[in-house]
Image 1 (cartoon, rainbow, N blue to C red):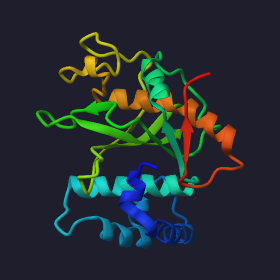
Image 2 (image 1 turned 60 degrees about the vertical axis):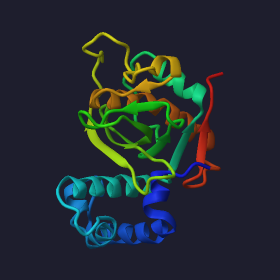
Image 3 (image 1 turned 90 degrees about the vertical axis):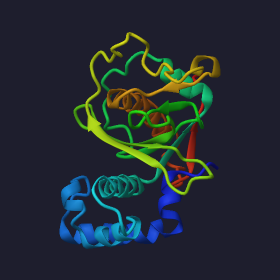
Amino acid sequence: MRPTPFDLAFGTDAESGFALIKTSLEQSGIDPNDVDAFVMDRAVAAMLRELVPEDGVGEAVLQHVALLQHAYLYWQAGGWLLSLTPDRARELLAAPPAPPTSAVAAPAAYYVQFPERLLWAELAPGEPHEPLDGLFVRPWPGGGYFLLAIFGMHPGRAGFSVVDTDGFPEDDPARTDGSPLFAPVLPGGDAAGLHSIVGEEELLELAARTVPLAIEALAATERTHRPHHPVEVGACP
C-alpha cells in the first residue's frame, strides 16, 4: 500500500494523539471545523508544537495548522482513503464539469489518492512542477469545499508540499487560454500522458469531481470499512 501524507506526518502516534484532541475538543465544546477555535485547544497546540520545526514561522505554521486540522477531521470521519486506479483517474479528469452534488451522502472528510506522477502543478512562479499525491476533501453544505492538496511526495523526500484552499467550484470553469481543464502544461506532457492543475479553481473542480466517488465508496463498503485502509476506485463499468 502506498504511504499517505497522514502516515508520513503522524505515523503510529496518530490514534492516541487524535484521541486526546477529540476528548479535549469535546470538553471545551469546540467545533473542529472552526480553525481559529481548533488551533487554540491545548491538545491541538501540543501536537502542533511537535509538527512545526523550531524555526517555523508565518506560512509554514499556517500550512502545519491546515495539515493538522484536515488530518484530524479525516481521522474523525473514519479515515476514508480512496485510491484511484489510472483508468478511473483519467475518466475523472476527462469528464465534464461536476454538477452540484449533495454532500450529505459522502463522508464528512476523506482523502483521495491519485496515481503517482499523473497530475502536476507549479506551486510558485518559476519553481519546478510537483506531482499531486492526493486531496484531503471536506464537502460543505451548499456545494462548497475545504481541501488540502498534497504535492511532491516521494521516497527521497522527508516531507511534502501543501496547498490549502476553500470555496465553490465555478459554474462553467475554463482556462483563459482556451485549453481543456487539466490539460498538461509541462513540455512533452501530452506525449507522456500527463495532466496539470492550473490555479485553485481547478483544484476546487477536481475536489467536486471526487464527491460521487466518495459516495459510491461509502455506499459500497460502509459496513466493512476499516479506518485508514484504501478503498480502490476502479474503472467505470
